Figure 1 (cartoon, rainbow, N blue to C red):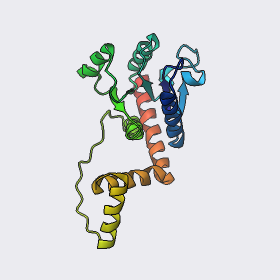
Figure 2: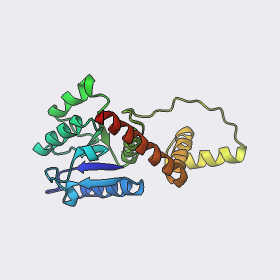
Figure 3: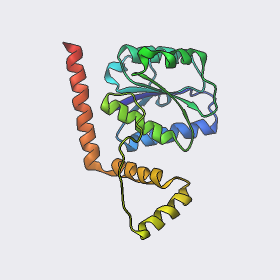
Length: 205
């Protein structure tokens, strides 16, 4: 899987520089190849083409002319776009129109990130690319589980430590198991490649 990541690289404050590093590391740890202007790969480079990318991620604290061009290129190729803003940052007017466009709902996703949720947002975006659907996955399947008192005491203690509900804690543990299961991740990568191959074949018809 390959994504293009764009963010302003001049006069970047330490907090955003830390976010850049964590984003790169997270994608790398999850088998995603990142091409970025931060790594010297600019959008105008002749070897770059969104036909060869699986998605576009933008940190949009500062809107530059390149952002509109990148979004247009990705939309032409029908690639999913994740537009990230720091929590509390006002939404740029030029982005509001894209967010409200019903025809772009399947391609354009805007989210406000913080230290606590940005990894979840990236994981969702990977899932979007793999499944071909732009949707924030929410719990919809209900399980009835019975635990021993010992397990319940652990869940109560752990949930208090990490400040999550017991249900959210269990979901987090399962998500971590999914991420760390290399056999399952290999299956997902194979499934993703099959989807990409199918889409390319349809575009060539």
